[in-house]
Length: 87
Image 1 (cartoon, rainbow, N blue to C red):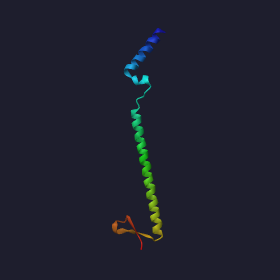
Image 2 (image 1 turned 90 degrees about the vertical axis):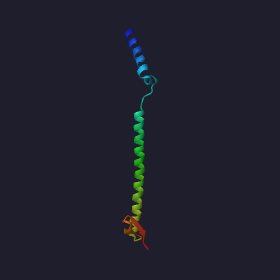
Image 3 (image 1 turned 120 degrees about the horizontal axis):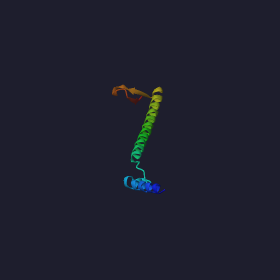
Image 4 (image 1 turned 180 degrees about the horizontal axis):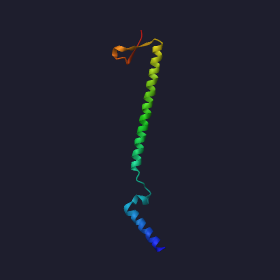
């Protein structure tokens, strides 16, 4: 019984010297925090990219409908990536 008590005292003393944050209940999770921030940034970037891509597709759909109706034509004088109103 005395040996167990001495062992526990030495264990707590060792923790106090080498890992004092363990006694306070704090965990060194800076690496996890940094990784979490990186994932959040990647997610927000991909969401904004998805939004831009969705808007781009909507614009192309509108231009396509206007081209089918004959209201716009492709302007090949500027490389073919531009459209001009007809008429």
